Length: 275
Image (cartoon, rainbow, N blue to C red; front, side, top):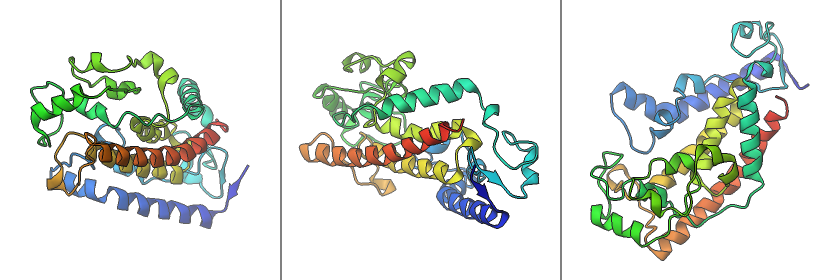
């Protein structure tokens, strides 16, 4: 079992807290001013993990710490504080996440969705999900949906489709079929690596947790740049997926995220091998 001496693990904990603070600085400042951001604050609203939790470093399962008695009172640690006790994490959670990640990793990435899930969420809708104008207007947005075949495989995106958009999807994702349908090209599946890291709690090394957070943040940016929303006022240029050039730009970025996600998915599966 890997062992970290006290100076090493305390240094890593300090570096982790500083990194987390830098990643969450904008959100914390806006929250203090009672403001919100349609892109950057998503990771703190859709995923219920607060900045103060992100800044706490854990060594991960299978690592022992020297002189860490103060952690003996922490949830999911052994009474002497020297290591994380993965037996305190719900077995059902471990089994589900392991099965989902392994199944996703075994499939090829599908890169033909072009982010149309965000368009389907406002198709023929009286109001949008975000207080941001539509780049093409309501009629133009509806036309894009009607001129494309929607291929969403992710239930947590599909469930927000409007009633008129849902039948236009190539399939019908359900929660029960999530393990069957999840595939590594999906932006939401890649963002969810952050969710699964938080579900596994202290069993995940702090560095890996923040790596999944950073990837989710970057994916969210593409997700919204390719959406029907006009985010020029927030400094974002659109990925115009209604054009051939925009589709190519989206697919190239999607492929890069799938590669980054594959590496982090593998690291999470390594964590699960110790649980």
